Image (cartoon, rainbow, N blue to C red; front, side):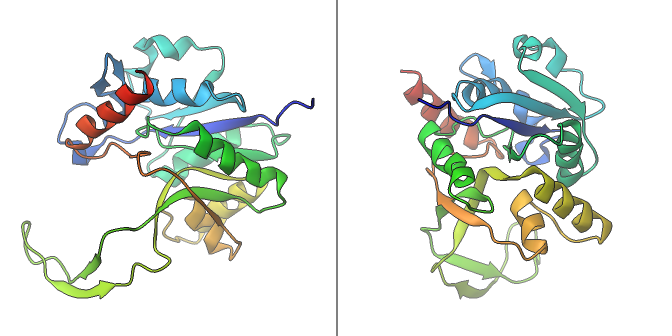
Length: 236
């Protein structure tokens, strides 16, 4: 039986997590006795098709080196830049050009489902251009007007939920294509909020692969309890 293709994942972890209202970057907050980034990396590296991870750190990071997982033989460290796109590009530039495909996954998403990851990876063998995990929007979506105060805003109109998705990670694209897209978007000053938006900037197709809504990004203090719940279920 032929071996399944294996891939490297870039994990940008250079952010400082302002919305967590904490002095500690969100990826280093503790859940169930481990930092969030440790849960994330252990989860990724336990998937049979993930061969290695490149963690992209802030140049002033002094925490990661003291984590037990920092000495993992399949983890490499590079230094990131000011924006997420700069950090992801630093990770991509570290990889050999012989890598055909690459994943990018948020450091603060520790609850990734392995079945969802396998489905996303199958894009490489189905002749697709790449894609992202995403979850269909279920709530009514309101477009707000310009913010008038810290507490209140005004509804401008209601957005249709039809064909509206929450972008998740991992995001999975051919390495050469993603490097080209990010370099061009950065050079031309385009707004790039995730890897898919860089691919879209080239007018290239991006596939949406439905993933579990439990694949949350720990961004705000209330997310910690929810992530702890999901992790406790997988480890039960």
